[in-house]
Length: 481
Image (cartoon, rainbow, N blue to C red; front, side, top):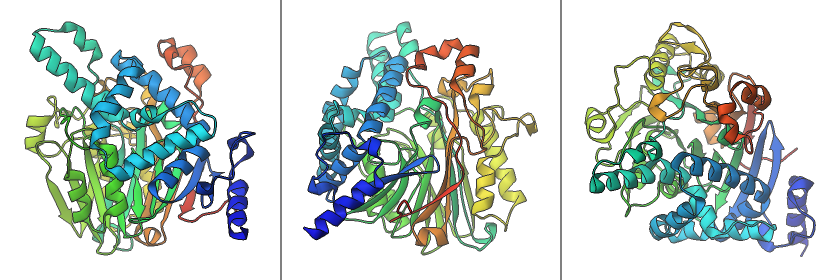
């Protein structure tokens, strides 16, 4: 009993009072080892135990944030696809659920149970649809509509309901002669809508009963990082950026959100990580994966298409990624005419800038320098500093060009919404640094933006000020003190 009470007091000490609604069942034994606290604009949450316990802790301690994230994802999904949320709930139940491993089915059920125990209204199919949001809205729906278009002949009405695969994020991984100490440095900033990014500020410390301990960023209600920056206690360090204009879907494959979580939880080597991502690949959320193994100093680049999935590896050098496809066969067979030579496009302009930074700073790259890279405002196409759609720290809301390859129109409220970095020595201690909001430190304010751009007023119910926090350190096992 004393041990139980100590665990319960720990929960109450680390969870803000606003996170524990009056009258809720705070004494559930599944909460014994779980806690949360706020730091630097992030919510840190520790989850521990069996899959259902981890899920319950997640759902209960983040219930309000999960409900809030649900409203955002629902609004965006319905707006971009012209389908109601019932469609996504049904797709989660019939398309995704049968292909999810029992371990993660149990965790998803646990999240739903935790939200309900906290007084929330979401159920299992809402949680599954939230986890599959990117795959369903930007891969499954276009695939479905393209199939209908082919079957029915010309379907001009589908043009407005055919969202393109996104190209969000900027990232690099370097090792050997390119880094200050010869070990791995990895960094990533998440590009998303600002509505999503304002909520993509959770640091998950997951200590599962099976597999490796994980430290990753993420969003409320999701079992994987989703923008995919994480480390595990076996020395694996990962991140990714999406492949612009990717087309492909296998309805019998395993969801990407499950495979990415499983890979980080169980991989002890680069080979393990690649194998898990390839197993049952459904083509959803197709990414260029940057993978490092701090034990060996080796880094790898997996371009995970559905038909083509080449892997490059090296122990001295770097890989950069900014949503450009690299493999000629994948570009030809699996993208909608992605033009790698168009240096005015966001993916290619950022690729050019990454290459410049790697070459200029060879032998000097460390985590503080990575933080500077993620905040970079150089537009390589116009050859001057300009916070826009082509800078590594993206500010698409400032540009009339938008990003047409992703269906981001003029002054779209999106861009770089947070950043993370770590190196081999930090990863050995299960530590990262992270910055909420624009990595450059600038704030996004809703009121003046919507006054200037009322065309985005449909986002008003969920769009919030995105204030930049400081670069903040997190370590597995952290406490609020």
